[in-house]
Length: 230
Image (tube, rainbow, N blue to C red; front, side):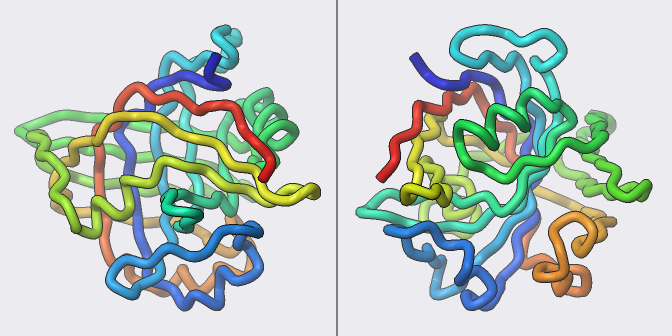
């Protein structure tokens, strides 16, 4: 049985090119950084969890909720994966389970979202509050989706199917299963994030850095398989 099944929908991916040295202390043992055209990326990813089940069970009040995470890209023995620096959700039970079982770095904060389709456009926004301050990421896109092309930046960002995390006994690995997603061409975006408050001083440089790209993907049903310790 899968550890978690859900739908991930309307994923906003804000991507920054960074110096690999920034991530040196976060790389799990046995993995190495994954590069696209010799560039190292870090991404802020916002999306909705829908119809969520843990071990086949829907937990009351923890079925539909937002998430925003900061992640980077690694590989191990031909497997392309992600490492989460921090994940924010509005549901404390999700935080407890993820931090305890999957050794992730979840935090519970107030969150909300908005999806609006109007005049052949999508307007998608995600918001979270930290230190009594609102943070938000919003995009406007075309409403007609398109397939992801091979060997592109968006394919690199979206097509990582393994998760890795540091563990006191080594490194945990788990598989994330989903079909290839379609994307909506982004027309405009707005980023209002206190990176220092949300992710710490180590990532405060993102405050003044322009993203290399911003994507909106439709998402799909997904499953997170049970972890193993490497």
